[in-house]
Length: 281
Image 1 (cartoon, one colour):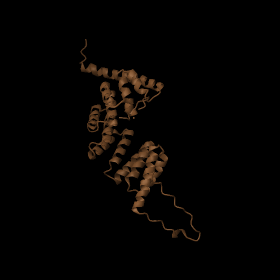
Image 2 (cartoon, helix red, strand yellow):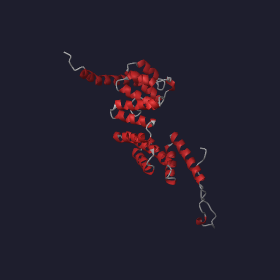
Image 3 (cartoon, helix red, strand yellow):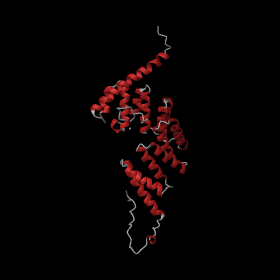
Image 4 (cartoon, helix red, strand yellow):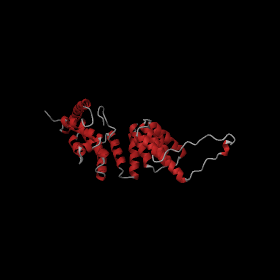
């Protein structure tokens, strides 16, 4: 459930682009006399593969402008290729252009009705737009096609957590972990859900797992530190925080944990009173 990240916690080409055709030609030859060369299917596939490699490399490197240009050209020149639409939607999503991203994924889904990638993209956008019912429906649609897809299970669980359905969310995470016990996203989300809903000790057990601290993703370590902080183990939380953060930022996080611990204790006190029947005299 990586979208829940209260501040200040820092949460979790082999083939070149086609060469530009030379435009110069002899003055005595009319432009109409130059016919465009016909590319074989193999050549077209090679160009597409080269474009995809460059665009994905730019996207992974954070160069959204290059990625956008190449993916946009792919949707224009190869509209029957889902990779171009998916890449463009992903680029727009990372740029924070949520509505443009939603439209791109929607167009992709119209062209490719069975595309789980388009559905996943729409679900992520819906979560960011706080359209949680729509996000849950999109994740469920993916799971109808791929019942054990770990990314869809993690996304659905996070959406349920955001809707305040912690028990249902945790059941979804556990369902995924039964199939993928080493999946970091499912484990991290379950641990965070447990910690924020009054079970920090169980959260610690889940987040520790079988791997060492340095083998975990930064988001897992951040959630583990939070769980220790909510349990009142500031020393353990600090040791984990300083693995990734400067001491000053770690101290800010510890202060936030204390505040959150007090808020959760206040929130839980009326519930305990209600369960006891309020019979104190």
